[in-house]
Amino acid sequence: MTDAVIRAARPADLPACAAIINAYIDATDWLPRARPAEEIAAMFSPDLLERRRVLVAEQGGTVVGYASLDPATAFLASLYLAPAAQGRGVGRQMLDRIKAEAPGGFVLNVWQPNTAARRFYEREGLAVAGESVDADGLPVWEMAWPGMSAPDLGAPA
Image 1 (spheres, rainbow, N blue to C red):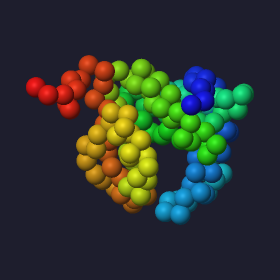
Image 2: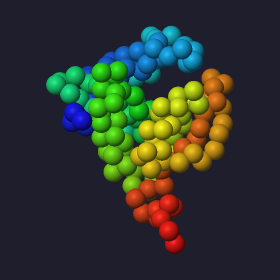
Image 3: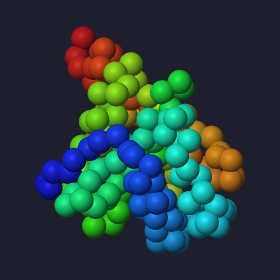
């Protein structure tokens, strides 16, 4: 595991965040590019930092991941890593920080073709709560983390 510094995003980090998600979209064979890369980059404007809690993972001065949590709805809108940071514990570090930021629990969506993400979230204590279709028509699993005060549902009674 390679430790990363997890911190609040700054406006200067936003282009790196946009590059991470754009690279992810381009690398998948199942995720259609519903929006041009430039449109996605424009979504990472400084006002995003006012609406959401955006965290970045930084290694060696480089942003290697980001997560975006809507504190009003406890919805984790995104958690993405650069390919070089995957499988090194950075995602777990980021998710641990999100859990600390949202101790009452949170929800997220995982595209159904992304079975690796579902396995990751299940290992980290999230559970599938339902299924739906996202705004682009892709099937998603709705997953939830019940929070720090929830009982261990797997423990014997």
